[in-house]
Image (cartoon, helix red, strand yellow):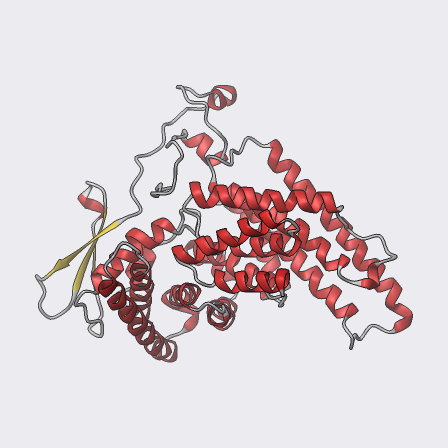
Length: 458
């Protein structure tokens, strides 16, 4: 992972065996783990920067050609991309560079597994993807506080123009091409959704792009298209956005449908190279969201559950909640008993933040409902809830100051913590982090900030 300007950690390296296991490496040759397992202790491969260099190539007058070269000395990794004739390129390469070398580096939302080669390669056939990347890069450039105001305004204009161009080109591409075979369309919808997170304070634009764009594309392609290869890489990158949407807005998600649940069961059978404990936490977040749907269908005013079956339905839901609580706590115990270091693994830090958030969220499915007042349910004591709130606050502060995780990944947890924050200091800290997330890139945090201010102070 490339360390950003706000990352104050010491750069450490792990041998390849410890890196695969995602455990702390004690160093030495062999290290303690490799010596214990009696396996070769192989140093990590040379790390390549996530940045890229964009160089104009004027050797071809008939087409616009762009050389994309990772910032390493090996010329063999240079990739030359011929852009489609529709794409005009005056200063757009500056914003493309801003997207890859600044935005992606500072906003990690893929665990370092973003399919850069696949994205750049699709520029050749997809003007919509190209312009979507320009839009995000330009909008990110407009937020550079040290840049002259004139340059920031120009970047905003370029961002909005590229966004509109991307939408127009996207409509044409999905009309003319088979969506099921169009990898570029997936990335385009994701980047347009990221643009909305950065531009629209209400969050409604992002919801539309995720719900009617990325998620719809995934469903049209079907689970099998995401078992291996680039489809798998994309799915594992974006599923947390769909999970966050469904939890934040208490809406159903296709990820809880049987074929997609089975996909996650089968995904790790033959290939665990990209598995991480956070994947199980994501699964538990989905289970919690699914349980919330079932609770709502029973307690809502126009429920279809007959009155003589109501007590049975409520007890059944409460029992499922208790079992889910046990599963969530079991995940956390197993996680804390492992050798994974939160200091060395930002995604483990994020997983623990989600653990504390979903623990509170699960309680909220029941303790806000008077129907469960006389039924045992997965309740937490006020002291335990406050402990979770404090953990969310402290760990999110740590993540924002020492990692490059995208700020948008934290707003769900901060909203959950805010709903249970009782001290003024807690509320100030939560608002401060939402402001920081908004200032850095994702103005959608303003919607969560306003929501909490309304909740706290009316």
